[in-house]
Image 1 (cartoon, helix red, strand yellow):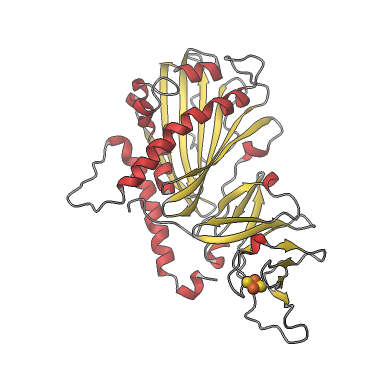
Image 2 (cartoon, rainbow, N blue to C red):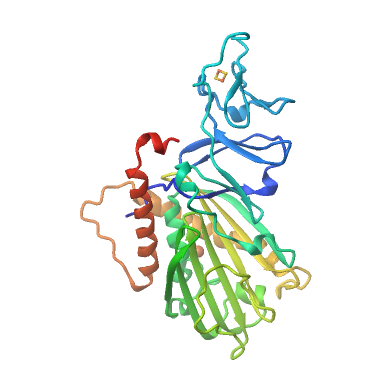
Length: 374
Ligand code: FES
Ligand SMILES: [Fe+2]
């Protein structure tokens, strides 16, 4: 499958828990489904169709009433937190049609993030959002970069993250160099909590760090362990561990997944959590949660924590990726007409990711339309 589709049967990140204060309405589109999202007085996050059942006016432009119902700003229909219409001003005494309701979306709050399922409700019960312990652990500092609106299919970002041979030339001189392209790649695949994952593992010794990595992690030459894991269509988790030559724990024989805390006590490094939430086939929202042990200070500015320093410098790197993804997406607008995509050795993980996506797209195409809209 080429990157032109959107998977609906997945838990996607709608934002950090802190992005949803009590009783503030937010409108978002996730996987082509417009949603109104808010946290109730009781602290629960609710999400349902953003289109009023009367004339499709966006409910996110309405207001919350003292009794907790949501009032549409156009003709005043009011909905309870289940999406059922409970009041119609122009029918003060008449019965309310059972059709006056809007579809709800399952929500889970976990690891400091709000996850929403835009697809089939029954399938949502068989999968869980991937665990991201570093994002909500008092021993770790977690800083958000973004959200960034990227005009490209989200699979293009996932492919970018799984194939970091693009560090040269795209990020040459900051996080990249050509030596990075020579590092052999191991692959790990499996399934956790109903989510198929694919992970690349790059191990290298006596690696001369590029300028940004020296700034963040001190050591100019390291033994390095670098993993990129597409945990689900929603999240790619990157773990980078560094030690001076000869000191890195190789964790021989262990599987890399599941996501335990990623850095050991005496190591330097980070856990980057990339969340990629599709808006539609050509647009997604990219967030990067930069996580580092709280006590790690940067080399570039000893007064700043490693996480703070990385979060401040990372937008330069992200802008280079955004530039590439946008231009790459534009080239998908033309018919193939003899164009043939070439696969290189480092594309193996990307091919696996496409296969996982193709299976998920098939799953949603096989659903009855009524189920899909449930
Ligand atoms: S469109 Fe919402 S009440 Fe009419
Ligand atoms: Fe990149």
